[in-house]
Length: 281
Image (cartoon, rainbow, N blue to C red; front, side):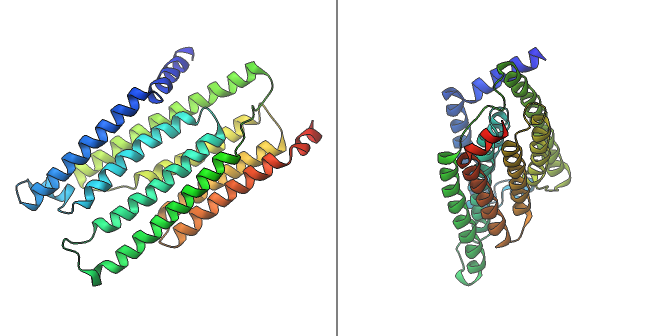
């Protein structure tokens, strides 16, 4: 177990370092430029059929590719933050959800033919606009949530705090292994059978169970009603985010914003009523 914790801590230190930020930035830049070049070659009919099927001829698809890659990096960051704080990981979940909405907006635009025929483009542009507005509202909610969120230790006992943190590290590593296996499976299915699976939906489903597991484990270290209710409410918000990912337009906006309002309400009430916690003691 000590070896597992050492590996996780080194991974955490590397992922949060400035050097890793530069590496991620360089990778995304190269992928974006290469995608644009490949798509242009597709438009000139200079590529094999499988490349044409994969990348298409619309330059906006390059933006979708780089946003997907960004989401992968953000999910890894979320998994690492899961071991630190419930509030921080919750904020990360909404950050990823807002980026998914922006990716969907670019995806809608990417379906348009070049040059654009406006009569055919209006439905896609309307959907893209709604997804963008939803992302902006979620972005505003994230900023507000980070301003009001407070981080309190689950217990005053330092040794128990470390023990709880180590259990969350094990859960995070398990989630990281699942994320890696899911990515390999989806790539294999796409490469060999041309089948696309909704990767982010599957991940958020796993995230729901990991959130519930953390809530259950936390009962070992604290029976405070306020903390239990808040963390359980956060898990409900994750369920709404998962439903929003597969919901049709308008419904996904309603579910995502509702999840944000749930988290903001829980955080405000949790921070506001300190006297209730004193009463429980």
